[in-house]
Length: 219
Length: 219
DNA sequence: GTAAGATCGACTGTTAACAGAACAACTGTC
DNA sequence: GACAGTTGTTCTGTTAACAGTCGATCTTAC
Image (cartoon, rainbow over all chains, first blue to last red; front, side):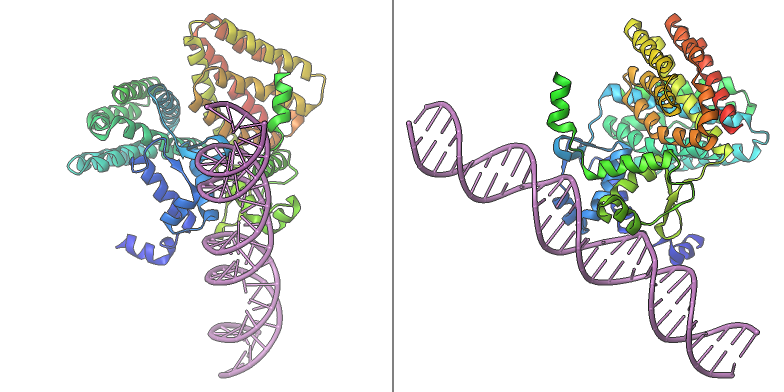
């Protein structure tokens, strides 16, 4: 009910640019727009029922997120990942989330943080009964939450700008394979490590988790 | 000669958007556009002699770089940093550059890498005779080169999207204070550590460098 | 005096239309 | 048959104009 009233208040009216951005991001990360696809502005603007100007602004954001890349003459196409790039993405991701773990361990009062992270894990467990997409969302939500709780806005922003790439990596591997990484226990291990406040153990746990995840994805 | 012909052939004609992007980035990171300044599209497009549409595209990129932030009703203004944010930025930077160091240490043939990094340090030494801006450019170039030489495009991209924030941090502190971090010896220590291939030592050296740098900047 | 309402101005959101460059196909000449 | 010149076509780069909304200022009624 709270969500309804909120949407009634004003959250509903997002700009066309944001809607287009969300739609494109989703289309790319679900594979509806396959890697390598040429994105022709005139076509796309007609499909989305918006003008080229508005579309172009959304495309600039996607470009900087790394979901689309520019070819000759400014021609844009859906980015194509290979195994090495996925490993690279997860290396950077590990570096960021390890930093998050270290900052969380340095907090004096970690109780509320631990509580929120365990709640996120509970949601993962619930989502396990739903479809694959739900599990992936729950997983990403856990990791995003970890970054957010540090209070380091730059860290959260950097992670977010990597999120699209992570989603593309998941799609590259296929959902069935990707969900092998969504194990509840492995995430509990991370929170357990955070709870002890042992930064070294926490970063090692995350590092192992990420390395394993990347290996699963690249097969 | 190849380089000359290339610049004559096509590097000259960058799009208006890119020119505007470069001009704005420079204006912001040099303080010409002070933090908090409201960026009114109509004014700015007139100043830069470009249309609003083109300008808006450039602004989207700057927004994602974190140089400008959106207020109420999509109104954009130059971002204002405080001491905590600078520490946060340098924490993330340290995480990224530490990863770079680890990846470089893992390379089998580091000779060419070491050579290029020492060349970058030599340029820092030469720039020491020039103005403050030159020293800062040389410093950033060294760190950017370190990320680039890993061959991890995602890492380089993440670092680059942080570069604007680093420049803002430098401006926040003032150039005179910032150049204290541009010491040649401290950068040589990093390369020395990389040369040994001892990843732990290298990351510690960088971590200490970054922590010290942030402390100098926030004064 | 003050609060509700009307009017104006200043911006952003959005769009349609105008250039111009690259690529492909077609034609004519030798 | 090969090749230079010439149309078209298809895109992106760029612009000017329209629409809507928020806030400020001025009015008016009580």
